[in-house]
Image 1 (cartoon, rainbow over the protein chains, first blue to last red):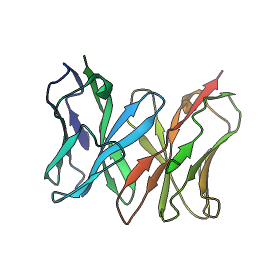
Image 2 (cartoon, chains in turn yellow, blue):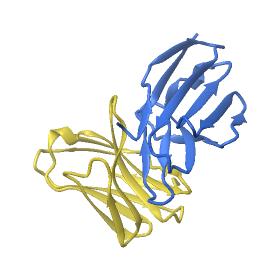
Image 3 (cartoon, chains in turn brown, purple):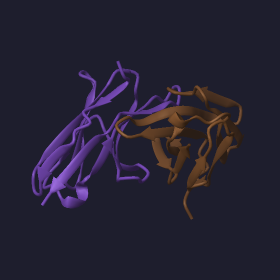
Length: 110
Length: 110
């Protein structure tokens, strides 16, 4: 089983819909991250969290929200999806700066 | 200026060539440095840590230049399987923030 699991792996949704991407980890790390990746733009940080009480905005948090339900779970929500949120989304955990990624969620907003 | 900058490439090299790329960073407080490898449509994975004195792992050599604020990755005797995107994150131990550069794409040709 993967140490960092993302669900769903692929999702197509309509403009204006609310969607949640989920991430769970078994590594026991406190730090968790959400990134989006677009061709030619690399990985951009959306939100990151130290623990359930600590949530921080990243480089591109507008249009997104997160919830850290437990040490092992960190969810990303798009309250009202728009087409330019079509991207590959990665969740990651980190210890000492070494990051472990989930397999990614490919989201398409039509 | 972006916190982490990389030449996106692509670097097209023949098998057996030596290739090097750099990653420059703007936050002098950064404490930990790494190189990650990402295959197409896959999650990034740790390639190697970068130590102040420089370090090798087989055909790969990483260097850190704190004064000039860059890290480098040298690949000797390139293999077809080295074709990938190489990412360098900037990790701040104080904030836990983990920011990635755009990535450098390497294509090794037969």
